[in-house]
Length: 193
Image 1 (tube, rainbow, N blue to C red):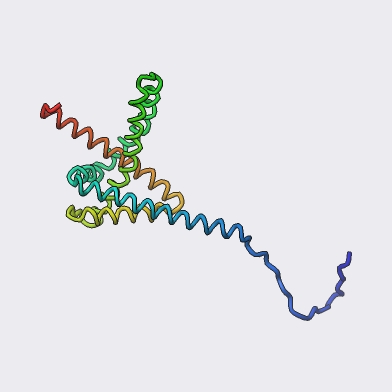
Image 2: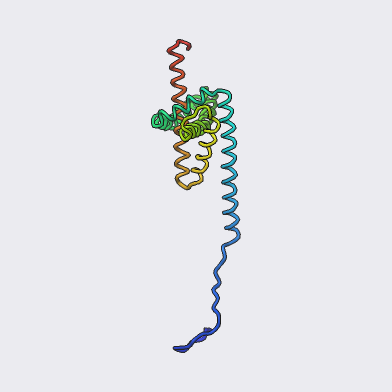
């Protein structure tokens, strides 16, 4: 009601100012905290995975390389085996858990399953790093670092990072299962077991 009416042809002199609402400080701090947290956890994963991979390479370089070779030579079969394992394992786990007597075995297998999921990323990173470095097996540690770095970078990309992480987990898990199966078969053929 207090607004003044301007006559037709009237000119308003002086400077006009526009006050834009500034982003809330809470939103800024939340976004900054999220970004800082993401970088921190990515760094923690890189360092911890590298340490684990480094230990595996130093303790058992041939076995580590065998799993990495399975990823490289049989990527699709590794992925398929990983998918089947992640589907069938919970069913097998629940059956064991339901028997009550099989609870200790079920818990042990669950721990092994979680470890395999984690180690799978390490083996895939090693395989990818070696592929990029032309498969120089005498530089396993360098290949591991390169592969892990690529994984961490891809993991930062929305959607693509989630898909990559999921596929890497499944492929690594499948490669470990396939390698264990072939090792068991070779021992059986030699009548060791």
